[in-house]
Length: 439
Ligand code: HSE
Image 1 (cartoon, rainbow, N blue to C red):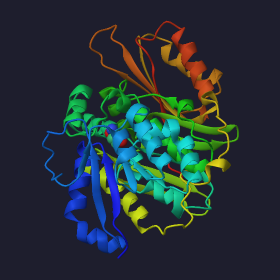
Image 2: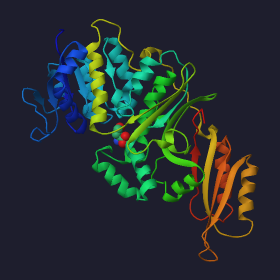
Image 3: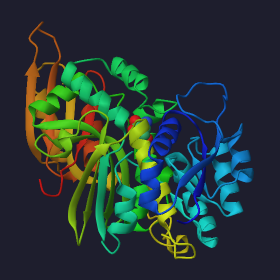
Image 4: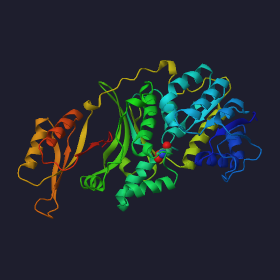
């Protein structure tokens, strides 16, 4: 049997502790599968005295990830520290500089430094594996980086934030408030250290930026993503969507268009009878549309200690099985030197269906005025529904419109014209509709 693969794990939170436990419990099976043992030789975390429910005896301890990366006796550095900069960034650089392979679950780090890291790794013939960075336990990186090589992708989209999907699901099924659902997601260990990253879509954007690069061969452009989170979604939206045959999901979508690549993260109406609409709770789903394969939808656990640890473990075993001196899998699907500059499509040119919910004063001509503003902007309507509570004579009424495919710019102009008419109460709600190719 070949020499053991020596790994150092920086970060012993939920994922790190799960990883240590799994590697220790399954050491024999892993050695058989990889043809060599996998040995944890070093770990690093802030608090040495905390009980993590794992046996760390005989494993070198480092207080700082950079110290571990620079000094530990390791072949692979496992970065589970988190954050786009600081210790995560410095320790990955230190590991690569030393000629050590890297496994990371850190989407923020890759979204910011991925192209530079890929160049550094490829210069030295090193691997950077990051399956856990996108959609938790779903092997989407392997699928895109290896299995689907040669396919031309047209669209990649998915539910990539377990916290948001958990919140939307519980709001719909149990009528609970947004705040209560968020607290529960945090308690269960799904949320990021700062939950606004989940709620406002940044976490999904980081993941989407990585998938965009794998799909379209362009440099990572995480700052050029159109972003809307779910904090603005109400029970009224969820109920109105259901009545019209839709469910609201936070989707990340990357799409090739004539004017460039669209990258967007926003609450999205998906048809109730689509498979992605059935993806509930913390579960993630990623849909890949490509010319040779067609449509592929991968569904699985997207957050939590074991799901993420499973993906990290797969990355480690890939390195354990790789042959010394063999050509390595390019970090970002193609050699970093061959990545193309990102060409951003303008969001106002986005084409699709829209759900628009308006609260208006109940008086003659309002309905007709709304329909006119739509028509003046060339927007064709699939449906328009008016609902009145009839509590008092001047109670507001809700008008819900669903458009056929139209341009974002036309919707913005129509909504702005409606705002100027003086009959709107509160802000209009506009939610984009996304349909699976086969729907
Ligand atoms: N906070 C993330 C989520 C964890 O909720 O999906 C995995 O990236």
